[in-house]
Amino acid sequence: MELFGLTISGALELLKKREISPVELTKAVLGRIESVDDKISAFVTVDGEKALARAGDIAAGEGGLSGIPIAVKDNICTKGVRTTCSSRILENFIPPYESTVTGRLLNEGYVLIGKTNLDEFAMGSSTENSGFFTTKNPWVTERVPGGSSGGSAAAVAADECIAALGSDTGGSIRQPASFCGVVGMKPTYGRVSRYGLVAFASSLDQIGPLTKNVRDAAVLLNVISGHDGCDSTSLNMDVPDFTSVLGSDIRGLKVGVPGEYFIEGIDSEVAIPVKNAISQLERLGADVVDISLPHTGYAVATYYVIATSEASSNLARYDGVKYGLRVEGNDLLDMYMKTRSEGFGQEVKRRIMLGTFALSSGYYDAYYRKAQQVRTLIRRDFEKAFEEVDIIATPTSPTTAFKIGEMISDPLQMYLSDILTISANLAGVPAISVPCGFSSEGLPVGLQITGRHFDEESILKVAYAYEQSTEWHKRRPLL
Ligand code: GLN
Image 1: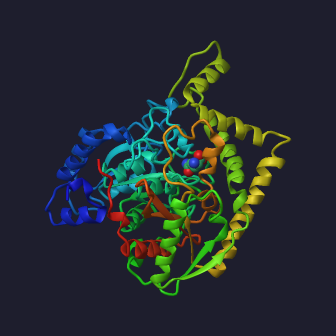
Image 2: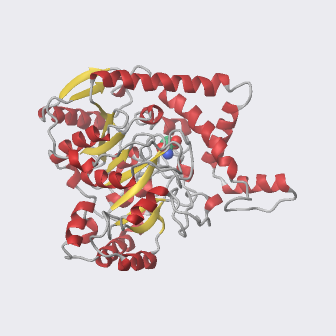
Image 3: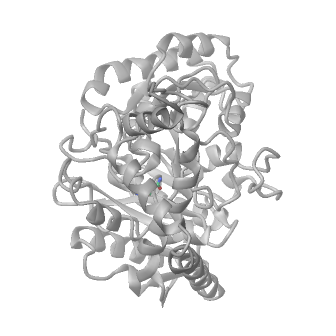
């Protein structure tokens, strides 16, 4: 196998035995980017020289990730390396500080291979909202890779990195993982520090891994998890070794299948592989039971009130004074308006307006407060379900990857593509997407496994058992 095709665990083994060096591995991955990224456009920034210099400084075997080339979504701050959020307004922003997650990766010896493309400020489901360019799905390049972490998912699928980090506010790790045939995990809210993640909707955002297999997701999660005094929402709680549960039996484990996730509108090309995957869990000894998450139908509306409200407030800081772009005007107000009008793309503006409206006096009670109340009901649905079952199995997305341009003019249709992932963010529970099949056109399908708060272990255990009993994760796109 070519070195760029390695997983984290596979690469670490060779590095530790000194069969390969961090420099060789980094060169291989840079070479891969060089040869395929013209077709995929996964990266906003690649600094090969810096990556090689870093790889040269690393003594193999010192940290848990020493010498592993990892791609980072471009809304996660990397000190001294441009962090754009795929927005014109931050096009030349070079963070003076390191995010907590990348700081932890640095301590473990990782090599930052590049910063990946996203929908501007992580708002979208296809990377078409990037202020720069659209990333292509490595399986069928006329299709979107999903979003907003589409650059990270495509980079992992195309072997342009060994693994990647993404962020998930309403599905942005899991949906692109499912579209690109890789593993993507959103941890429990509070498990991973958000310090240095450019805020979109702070009560929903979580950083997580995008990897070639489940073991690698556990390895990365081990590194990025844990309390951080710089993020008041990060929980002070012990972090287990997530790899220790891999390989354990899932016999007797209770798998809930919510009827609300298999409704009309779910493409049969998705529903069939997912149902087969659930049968496979049964063959592995799990007990499958029908459950109900009765408020699922309100999730999209609830999310788009809360997410846009928080975004309108978070994005107020881009005013031409504190960060990035500044467009001069006749006076201060004119400068603000010109900067924001030129710096933000259409979708970001739409969300700022929606959120500002929802928070306005007179409307707050009708929209924002109501949405928060419904959010509680959605969380309770999960709590109730988890009294009965250990995990919940569903499709990750109602469809496989759609065509570039197909939905961009219809934002409501695009919003609906998040219908199966959003509830986990509203409830704060962890969820993973693992490859579970392909459509007749050769597009990957994802199985979503959701767990109790802070029970990433059950999710990983089931995902691993499923993965090891199937071959889907071994397929790679032909590039
Ligand atoms: N697609 C959803 C949105 O547009 C989710 C985005 C995300 O998770 N960052 O808001």
